[in-house]
Image (cartoon, rainbow, N blue to C red; front, side, top):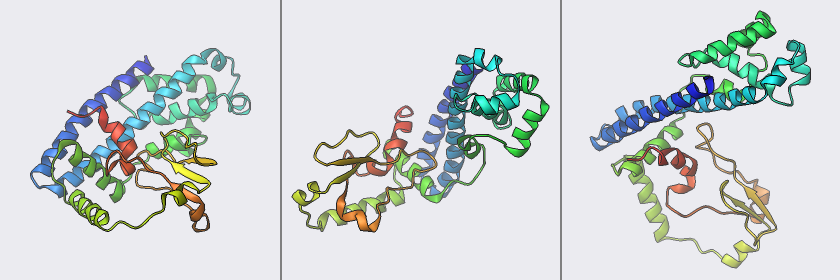
Amino acid sequence: MCIQRLRYAQEKQQSLAKKARRDVAQLLADGKEQKAHYRIESLINDDVHEELLEVLELYCELLHARIALLCSVQDEADLIENHAENGLNEAARAVVFATLHAPEIKELQQAKELLTLKFGNDFTRTIIDEKLGVPDKVLKKCSPRLPDEELITLYLKEIAITYEVPFSKLEEASREEAEHEKSPTPTDSSSEDSRPIVAVDNNSLEDGKHAITVKKPRKDSDTMGSDLKVPRDMKKDVKVKNNKQNAHDTDLDELKKRFAALRR
């Protein structure tokens, strides 16, 4: 039941996010960029919360699939010593801690009470008060913080592109790209292909022309503004390959997947 409730909550969150994006697009169309900026901050936090619900669904799936094994655990010491590798210890602690940050999922509270009954009050207290053993990915998504300015700009750019509305920073980027295209730097394609290492996007296939293919890190709400960093002394050996579907796709591939299901 908890798993079904988590899925329903995600669907509801996606529906609300779709409406919120349309509202932001309308603000941009009306020239109210500062107001759209504030609305995006809330929208990003909602997206992070949706990511938390998705992670919790996976943990609940794991506990459900291994319920017989969970029932065989004697106590907290047994859980830590013998069930760290199979994920039970991590999943149990994540579910207990997340009850504070996903109060809309009443079934999570029931799961917490069952785990407390099995492992004791000290088990729950140390998780909630000291965050003992709680996975970092859960802690990050449960920690409220102001989104980075770069991430806010990326969201606004994508909404402007999706709904075809004006946005000042998008227009500035278009002008810079146009100027760059007018004065291209000379490149030697044969020289590029001769480099032994190629860095490709996370969802791209390996490049058979190079000896080593490195995939760029997958981006989410935490790493959207980050780019691949190549050490200076290795730049001559590395060719960074980007998808050229669209001028904005290079930095926003992962973000576009999120928007794909929310388009009009």
